Image 1 (cartoon, rainbow, N blue to C red):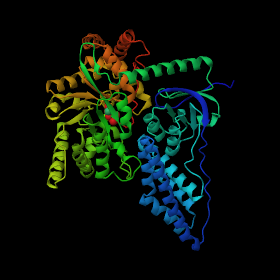
Image 2 (cartoon, helix red, strand yellow):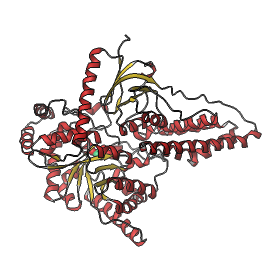
Image 3 (cartoon, rainbow, N blue to C red):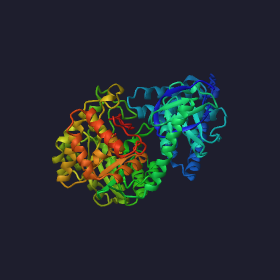
Image 4 (cartoon, protein in one colour):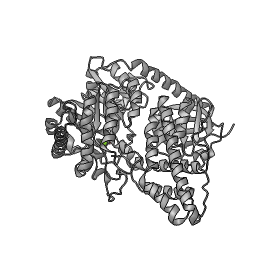
Length: 599
Ligand code: PEP
Ligand code: MG
């Protein structure tokens, strides 16, 4: 048997899988480079235009085919590829190179693609940086079409195959998951927000990405074990390692069965406290999975993801269509839409001046208040969409009462404008804020007088309270949700909301960590929002705990002074009450939040 090799990458989609490697040969086509004569130019531009049309048709057909098969999650990415094809800058540049530099279309496409990719390289935000591989996929499709190659071929893989590749195009990922045979995805490129990661999470297929050069050394047929939560890939594992993976798989299957069984059950503590469990989402395509796992509403829709793969901001109509789609899919369940958390380098298209400290810079509500036009486009769309469901709107990163007032008055101005224009809107909806800065926590009592609800963003609240950059691996060990400073902040925020009689929810990663549910219950939190996979485990803990018991426990925990002591105490109590398999993914001691947007 071959030697065991292990690789550490980025856990992009949770779950464990064991199977034989299927190595996807994603080598790029060789680009022919030809110098043209003046007489050939016109024909070459025509050839380029024809390949654009052909590529566009292929993407449209693929999208229709996949959505007919219930694989709508690829739609948005394929649509973004179509938009890239028609990007005026791309078209003008390629045509200019053909005409002025007398080079063939394949060469020109590659050159413009390369230039665009470099622009993305310098972006600090992982999400937008990842989009450069989409440019490559679009360029590759064009070149293949120009050369008359076959594209979008069906890929047949054996059952439970572990797909190993340098990178996987959205079209290939779509083809692969529709076969239902994929055990896991393993790629050298990519991050938490690359399309393979997004598709894998939406389809609940384990994935590890960003493995560097691992796939170069994996051969077809190698036995591969994948842990998508820990980002671990073992090639040709030993019998003992396989046994451990099989045990985790067995527990995973058990918990999935539990998920399906408990999806319909209410989250009620043993002493009768009704807890609401909502879902966090970035794409409308995630809704079926959230509902299947028992989400009672949407607690956080991160709308900055509408800026996927594009140079220009979405139009009011595009915002509106997305919100309407989500509201309609959720029926009368509440849908909390967060206004844009853009800023820093999270502004595609134009290069903002470099901020030395973007997390503390012009982002989120600050950015929107500084770019009123962009903000108004979203607010108008939200007001119009409010006619289609149970909408709640919240503003991110509020750090003063003036920001809330200004944002509210901008919303009211848009409401009056729409009303003057005779445009249909729904009734008034609750307007809340994310409490995610220490200043907001300190003035929570005052903010509660003017906000209709709170949603606590622990990812940022912890970052700012403990002064640790959530993107910086070197200080990740300091990211501790059970630090006494965090517990005291949460206590104050929840108390302020209750005193003012407004709902308070939590949508940061802490809410989805079943190992911390006891603490949040004791703090009086009654509304949690998390990703779909986290809902069953959190519900399971809630249904087995009494709040009174949790309160006693928290009082004891908060008597300790260090985060380590509190963690040790809580972990001990969690282990005593639940066998470790039941609270899978327990993060005591803490880990950094695996979120897709930057704080
Ligand atoms: C948070 O900060 O906890 C949060 C939910 O917002 P994001 O992760 O999008 O910054
Ligand atoms: Mg945040």
